[in-house]
Amino acid sequence: MIIEFAGSPRSGKSTTLDTIKDYYIRLGNNVKLYTEGARFCPFPNTSRVSTAFWLANHALNNIIEGKNQFIKSTMIFQDRGLFDALGFLLLLEIEGILDSQNEIHPFTQNKKKEDIFYYMNLFANWGKYVDIVFLFEIEPEIAIKRDIALQIGAGPGLITNLITLDNLQKSYSIIYDKYNGIKFPLIERIKTTNLSQYEIAKKIVNKIESLRGNDEEKD
Image 1 (cartoon, rainbow, N blue to C red):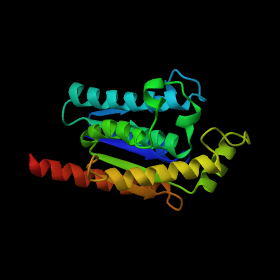
Image 2: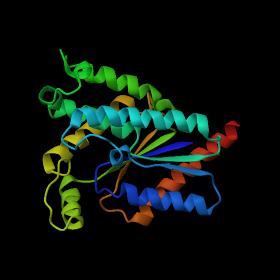
Image 3: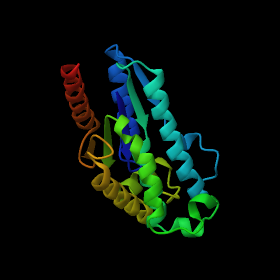
Image 4: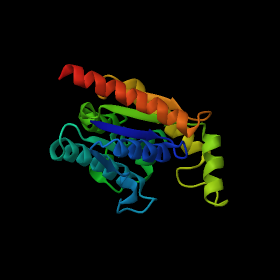
């Protein structure tokens, strides 16, 4: 079972993922965690086109490995996987980055408006192997406040600024409408602003157990 945690920075995604992962480990389940690819990406933060396509391929490799290396009962958790990678690909289009950063010529030369969706559709075909995506959503203003507090007043970042966070939310919404139940079996949106970590974790566990119960009935 492959479970992806996706969504806005500072929405509680990674913290909740750690809680859920530890919960299932304590119950004696086979658990595998794939951490987000941005931690290993070899490109500088400013190379957003190269980074976005690298992350999409990284997420795809994790899916292939997970489906072929681990037994069916293994719970595979992915922090920022395929859905998130698609979000950052579309963000390139929304913010006009493909026109200004031309470092990957096969993806950007002679670019037509529909080209980015062509590549997104190719990657999204692997979404059928992701059993569920939990999409964490939070208002950009709150995400900024949390980020500044955690960074001790460092100020807005490359992604954690109001304009980019708002565009990322738009990107997620477009992908949800385009692929939910079509390329991805199930995308569950969770508005985390007014929920405690316990409430979020409980909601997610209940959904996972519901899906696992359905799988057992099929078997």
